[in-house]
Image (cartoon, rainbow, N blue to C red):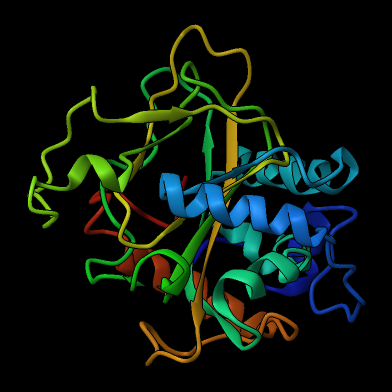
Length: 272
């Protein structure tokens, strides 16, 4: 656990951010036709990619705090000690309810990245859940869980944008899943602007690219995972989006992430 330890110390590192402040979050609204189009693209392609939804003044304080944490050798995931990352995702309530039902929970799985050196990489090819997370087909399809990835800076192939392998490319002729062996020709790069939103069912293969000498800016991003409460919890405790954890609970949750994700990145530590 890095220093500083108290909430007041953390607040001193991030002017403009808060911890445990009660606020009313304004959800982003989507017209019914827009949600229909988003949903159609999601089920066709196997993921969602939305243009910028958040203003720069929402992103900048969080991004700057991550720069400060990284400068002190503190892992970017500690940004979740603050309220503002939770508020960003809470603003997506309309979208989340559309895909996961009125009663959805936040899985205790979260991370943040700051790539700013040549050779730094996002996580290697993986799935967020090895079990099937989509049931049924067409209009009858039901989604059990959803991962969202939110870039705080512009991302492209030069600074480590996300790559996905559409589910259609992982099906054998008989429709059964094929063993996964990453092939760059199967992957689709998803360059996006700051404040955009990427999302996928948790059984979709994806990975982060590499930061190269051609990069024009760092790649800073957040991720959070959500579940339809109609299914047994994939992990516990499920968090209520309208009531983010207390400071102490956030701190414990963050510490737990390093062990949880070490199978994806064996080099993870609480230091940058």
